[in-house]
Length: 284
Ligand code: PAF
Image (cartoon, rainbow, N blue to C red; front, top):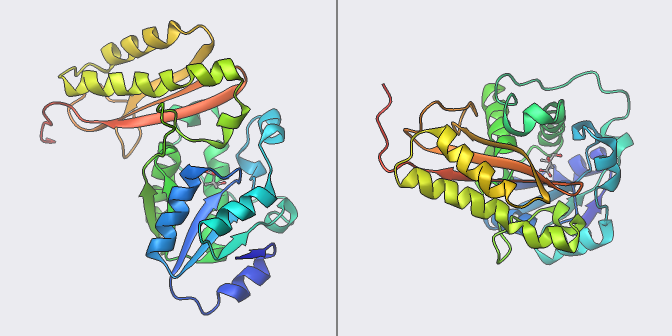
């Protein structure tokens, strides 16, 4: 595996490659990233893993400062999963001058994480579009854990006619259900012990929906009560939205994305499930 830090070198290295998969990451790689890399290695002749902690998408400077940076361990991880190139530029390579051009999406960032993290998805969409243009992959791989990010990137590439296939990869979980995340390693032991309650609450909500509950407020109230019983968890949001436009639904009569964000101490975790009602009504 080659480690490349400059855009010019990366473009030169990829010049004659005809089947390229891109796995964009911010490092601190874990088995969730491993699943993205494995899928890309299976689908493509060349897999590029990008590792860039993108300052543009952090709304809290303390979050950017605390984000784990472990390049050597990440390089060993990517190599062990058979990636071909690790693209690890620094901020001056990605943003050599103050950034004046950004990708702005309407509607999709208005709820879920976007409501609480102003500018976050503008930063994500902008850096992903830059990476897609730098690498020109045939396929790019994103985890379903970041459901809003995935929906936004799909919509951006479709609306802007970016020639790439966006491949969603299912969330990888710890044996107790906690979704794998680079932030999990920042959890205090007592918070780590509580964290599986998040997925448990989502599963219970999906169960309620599958058993016929069509009122989102009833599902939300039950989830909020479950999380309020754990005093160390501060729920930021628990929302039920349509999976494409990410807008809250008034009635659950088709598949819905059930998503939450919560703070355990200062660590913010997100998770989601796709829930299906007992009977899906045809759209009018
Ligand atoms: O999901 C992430 O790690 C980041 O948001 C991404 C897609 C690499 C963009 O910085």
